[in-house]
Structure formats: structure tokens, C-alpha cells
Length: 120
Image (cartoon, rainbow, N blue to C red):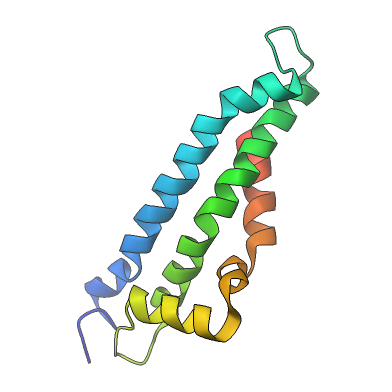
């Protein structure tokens, strides 16, 4: 049994993909917000609905970019066999068994959550 399967080390299972998800998702949300505000017309005197829409769209795109990393993180955290399956093995398994769209399993929940969180 390795140190990541139990004890304090278990808290760090999937930390690499978690950092990648945070970086990818947050940078997309923050970087796209201003251009999307211009597209939807959310200027200074615009209605709150337009500003809400701009935030929601930026959040949705960020969640789509971050979802593959989130999926890899969850798979690494859920591994209980003590082998410590790495990110490379998980990526290969997902792609081999589900194709490229396998990386977007469960994206609906992530997108809805990100839209609400970013818009508010």
C-alpha cells in the first residue's frame, strides 16, 4: 500500500490536475469576460441581465476548458486499489474507451455551476 492510499498523503491525490483545472478555468473566465461583455453589449449603463449573461457565458467556457482536468482529478482521487493510477494512465484509459468526448463526462453540472457562480 502506498502513502497516497491512506493517511495524510491521501489529501494530495489528484492535486496536479486540480491545479491545472483551476488555472485553465479561471484564466479563461477572467480573460474572456471583457470581450464577452462587448459582444453582449454589457457596457457601464447596461441592464444587469446583460452583465449576468456575460458572466455566465465566460463561466461556461471556463468550465468546458477545465472539465477534462476535473475528470482526471476525480478519477485519481477515487482510486482505492493502492496502485496510485497516474494521470497518464487515466488519460489513456478515457481516450481508449470513450474517445475525445469522454473527457467531457459530467460537464453539464460543471457548466451550470460555473455559469451561476461567475454570473453572480
